[in-house]
Image 1 (cartoon, rainbow, N blue to C red):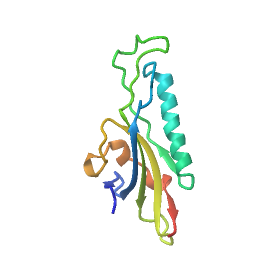
Image 2 (image 1 turned 30 degrees about the vertical axis):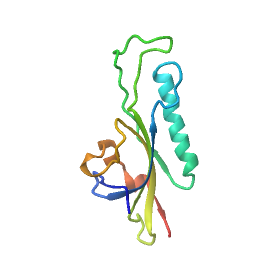
Image 3 (image 1 turned 135 degrees about the vertical axis):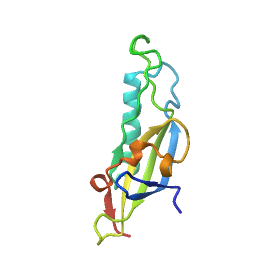
Image 4 (image 1 turned 90 degrees about the vertical axis):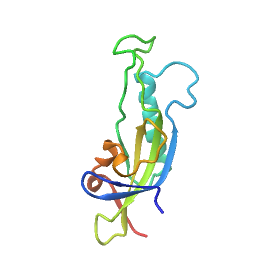
Length: 141
């Protein structure tokens, strides 16, 4: 059973088999979201995925960044910069790239505004635009 199915813009169907979601700013005790904080958050989630799934390729989808106060203002660290509220790490599987193999897999790190499972046409365009053939890795059962 998969958690969700996405048809990529290339036409390939991929299945979401595992999903980890967390608050983007969970545990942030002081300060405010700014470029420096966000760059660290982004890097932390990417490294988390690489450690947790060290035998699989990891692809990072660059998140959108919003500036609610415009490009000026903020405190000592510059303008307020906000990432989408939910950080996601998902394991996706699909048919093999090489017919001699059993399937292909890719771990994807992305950010989204709401804690919903991406599926179908509602999946973010950045997820649907993944270049599976270039990024995924075949596996044998």
